[in-house]
Image 1 (cartoon, rainbow, N blue to C red):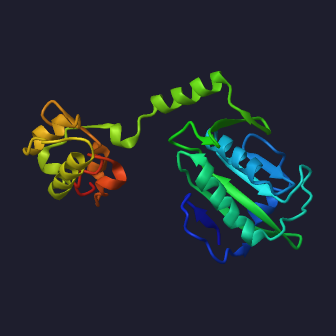
Image 2 (cartoon, rainbow, N blue to C red; image 1 turned 135 degrees about the horizontal axis):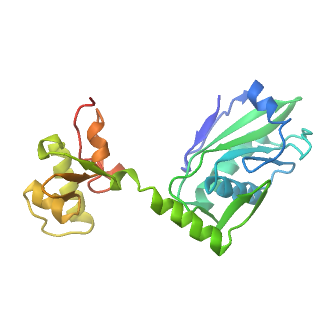
Image 3 (spheres, helix red, strand yellow; image 1 turned 90 degrees about the vertical axis):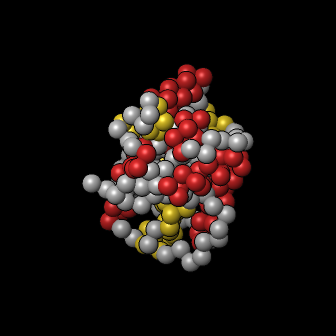
Length: 241
């Protein structure tokens, strides 16, 4: 059983101890831009490496294993899982998700962290951007930062993507009301009551519903809340076709 840590301050209890064939293979693989082995349990080094993987192609971290694949283990491994969660939650920004597992290798307990590429970067650890270069983690250079920002701008977030051909009738009417209330409460005052004019004032539609922002969710069978998506991001409730 692997534990998904989504950078919350909720306490995890009872992490399960597992041994998977795929995990054993990590002992044999050389370190790379997606694999790091750490002999010593060090929260700072773990946090920097997690940040670098988020800013890159993702990757895995084995804690308690030497560079040559020798297993040394992690003392008090169960407590270490909780400490890693707190460290990443408090010091990695924007919030991200990783998997943390306790894995049994040669009668030793090892931490395995699995990090997917981040979609909201550049990510920082303790207010510093880190990147992966080969088998090393280092601070980002100004050039690296420009490249990371460029990658973010080249792939718009889902709520900013237009959906062509969206009609007012395609939108969830209750969600429209909640969006208006949320927008009024947070940053606007006296939005138009007419839904189409209200969405236009929020820059969520163009050309009388020829283009609808956040419209990728028109294909969802169940709308999500405006609080999850941001104002206007959860308006579309059309049944999936």
